[in-house]
Amino acid sequence: MVDLSTDYLGLRLASPLVPSASPLSRDLDAARRLEDAGASAIVMYSLFEEAIAASEEAAARFFHEQAIGFGEAESFLPVPAAEDYLSELDDYLEQVAALKRSLSIPVIASLNGISADGWVHYGRQLQEAGADALELNVYYVAADPFESGAEVESRYVELLYQLKEHVGIPITMKLSSQFSSVGHFVRTLEAAGAQGVALFNRFYQPDIDLETREVTPTLTLSSSYETLLRIHWVAALYGKVGLSLAVTGGIHTAEDALKALMAGADVTHLCSVLLKEGPEALGRIRADMLRWLEEHEYDSVRQLKGCVSRQHAIDPTAYDRANYVKVMDRHRAPGGVWR
Image (cartoon, rainbow, N blue to C red):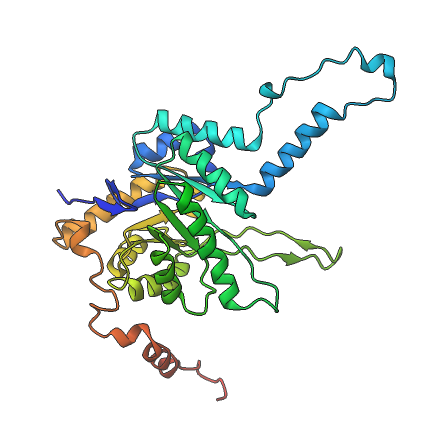
């Protein structure tokens, strides 16, 4: 039997298939179905600091601003007990604990903060609730033309330093692809104490409504094509860094996952395919992966990992400019098209 086990963030996982942050982790039944299908860990849906602040503001209005304009009538209003009200944070911490009770696989909390105090405060509480690791989903859009790339990177590094002082569980950084030097930045994060990186966060691009002239949110699920950018950078990083590497975005098939592992990934995160097909899709991908490994006479995922990384590829330049030159040279216009 092929050994699918892998190491990620210092955790020993039964396979490299890990559901990423999604609404599925809000439901205990869905989480159990993911574990039954072969998930080796689960990343929870993100806890947003803005959502916590909004729920606290709503609670404050509910508890302290009940005035209805009639003093006599107000004296008969019951005063709600604060402990009976569950905030956004309370709900999340309870779900961490519930998942830990219900599952035998590691539970990785996902935190999306906006303030230094918020990152530290909520990170500590997630650790206390029982999370096995913490994924920092920084999701920062550098839209200020007066902010330099160095300033953007220092924001991440300072955040990591502060959290490491207060949180003892492994921390992985979920990054975007829009850094000027991804490899150097990952090495900087490793030096600052990150145990892993997840490549890459998907930025959800807003659309414009032509009739109302409003900027509207849009959601487009990923496709397998999106794995190529992730594979490129994991292949470049493999063997050059010591932290864990996760590919997130575009994993829909066993072929996608196998390519990511060949490039050097320790785990592959799945989301869109699970939302489209349900938790059982993970079982299909796992079975297809096992079949391929057996057919190609691999004994373990470890044997496969990194075999087509940049340092082990037959032609390493295929990952670099040579690929651009060859692709452009091979293009042929359709017959009848002037060129």
